[in-house]
Amino acid sequence: MTYTFSNKIASLAPSAIREILKATSQPGIIPFAAGNPAPEAFPIEAVREISRRLLLERPVDCLQYGVTEGYAPLRARVKDDLRARLGLGKPFDELIITSGAQQAVDLATKILCNEGDVVIAESPSFIGSLNTFRSYGVRLRGVPMQADGMDVDRLEAILKSERQVRFLYTIPNFQNPAGVTMSLEKRRRVYELARQYGTLILEDNPYGDLIYEGEALPCIKSFDDDGIVIYAGSFSKILSPGLRVGYTLAPSELIAKMTVGKQASDVHTTIFSQLIVDEWMRHYDIPAHLQYLRALYKAKRDRMCGGLAETPLQFQIPAGGLFLWCALPDEIEMLAFARAAVARKVAVVPGSAFLVEPAETVNAVRLNFSTPTDDQLSEGVAILRDMFAEKY
Image (tube, rainbow, N blue to C red; front, side, top):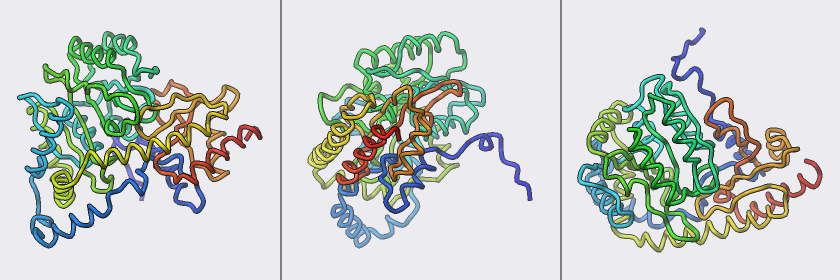
């Protein structure tokens, strides 16, 4: 039988990252292409004890349906935490629990975009979000990244020229894949431009807690007196990606529509996962856990960057997050380099996977330092050094 797919899905290619991740499951592959937390980052004993206690004391709560907006105590706890730590949340804001931050991106696009509308995104940007936007038939416009965040002059030019911009998507902290942090000056200007041109901002902050040096900058959402910022966060990078618990803080009118959209998607985020997260936040020392994660990942970052300093790769050392964006010398072709690396048992992601518009070009690769073991980091970096020395 010949199958006919919808227009929304027929043009989508499999995620380049997911395809490359298939190679990481092969024996002996060093996973520089991944983005998973380190196995030692998981608070396994805490989750084991919480799960045991919940199933003994509250088995029906763990196994029953929940409400679409999310488990009420967890919603309240997350709202209080965002207000206390980050200064987020105005009287007009509400919060919904989502199945990871990826669902927050999907729901925002679902409720705001018609086919042909424009979404602006940093370029390069996270491929999972870009494919979500494409699945809704939007037109993507890319804003080039600079050392201190997106090119805001280019952003303004796009806002001036486009009349159907629904929102701007940004990852201000330790951006995936570029590793760049948006400066405070640019955060303020991005907000003012969005207000001036009447568009929304979708602020995705999955890596903000993984800061290794310097001081954390205010979230764009903290400036939001006008109800124009949708803030997406997640427990995937600090607790567990497998639990699939994220959240969105946004004006209540938007959250109400996201709730309806979520009912048509998965009804509610897994209640057992929500209960685990709530108990973890209630009873465990989260600041101490975050300090442990920061020390763990900073050491991994330093190991990778120190070894790569002896190669012709050009990169900016990220102040946090999980990724390194490496520009290749002009004479080295990106896809050939990536294939050669895989042949030598090192998986890397070609930078083209993260581009926003078809006409854009790049000669770079993204490397991840959270997933590999220390031995794999040292071995993988040595292989990349040899590739350059031997013209790969």
